[in-house]
Image (cartoon, rainbow, N blue to C red; front, side):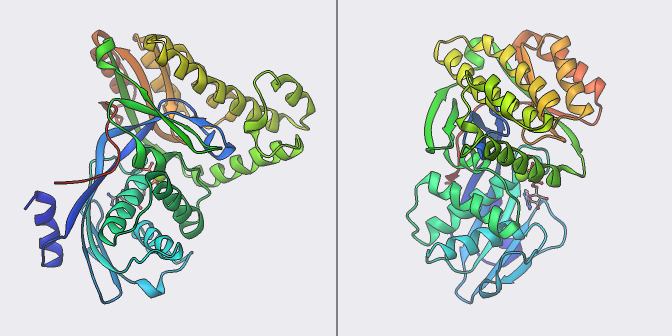
Length: 376
Ligand code: ADP
Ligand code: MG
C-alpha cells in the first residue's frame, strides 16, 4: 500500500478502493477574464492534492485531511444543502451534492486527503480539492463525464453550494492541463488548446513566490469586481466584456458612465489581448519575449483592476530589478502568489533578492505538469 493508502487505513480502519491526485495551478496570463467570457492561459503545478477513497453504503460522507486540525468530519449525504457550511469539508460536500443534483449515482464515501499545494496561496488548493474529489467519486461510481464537464460541475459546486461567484479557470486547469503545456481556454465556447511551454529547453525558469499574505477583504472584493464588469457590459449593451474588441476599446471607454467601469473594462479588454499575444509568441518559439507582456499584465491589474497589494508589487519589482524577463501577480489578487519568468542563470539572484525583500515568502520553480489523474 502507498503512504496515502496507509494514512487512509489509519483513519478509517480499512483499505481505500483507490487514490487520485489533482494539481494546483498558476495562471501565466489572463486574469479576471474567465468570468468575462474571455481567454485564460494557466498551467498545472507539480504540487497536487491527493485523495484516498472508499465508498460507503450507509449514506454518510466522512472526510479527513492531513492538512487540517479537527479530525474526521462526518456528514449525512441526504442532509447536504447549499449554505450549510462545514469548514473545509464544505468543498467535498459541495462536490458530492452537485454530482447528485446532476443526476449522477453517487453516494457516501470515506475520503482522506493530503496536499503539497500551499493552502490559501492563490495557487488554487481549493480547485485541486474539488477536482480530486469529483474525479475520485466519479470514477468509483462509474460516472461518465468529460474533464471540462467535471470542471464545470466543480465550479457550480463553488458558485451554488459554497456561495462564491468564481469563474471556471481554476477547476479547468486542475482537470484538463497536460505536462509541458499551458492550457488556452476560451471560456465563451469552452474551447481548449494545449500550448507547448518548454521553459527548461529555453534556459528559463518560472519562479512562483507565495507571499503568504491574504488580505481580508479579498472575497467581497471579488464579487464586487465581477458585478462591476457585468455593469460595464450592460452599460455598453453587450453580453459580456469579452464582446469589446481591442480596436473598439476607445469607443467603449467613451461610452461608459464612470471611471471605475472604464478601468475595469480597460483591464479585461487589454488582458484578453495579452493572452492572444502570449500564445502567438509561444507558438512562434519566442518564449523569452512573453516577459514584457506578463509585466504589462501586472501593471494593468495594479493600476486599472486594482487587485494587487504592496507585497505582490514588491515581489514583481524586485524580480524585475534582478533580471526577471517579466513578472506579475497570478490568481485573484489581494495577496497570494506572483510569478517571474527568469533566465536560469539569474534564478539565484532573483530568489535571494525576493526572499530578502519578503522573508515570509515561499519561493519555488514551477514546471507545467499533468492535470488530475488516478494514482497507481
Ligand atoms: P487557494 O488559493 O489555495 O485556493 P482558497 O481560500 O480558495 O485558497 O482555498 C483554501 C481553502 O480550501 C482552505 O481554507 C480549505 O477550506 C480548503 N482546502 C484546500 N486544500 C485543502 C486540504 N488539503 N485539506 C483540506 N482543505 C483544504
Ligand atoms: Mg481557491
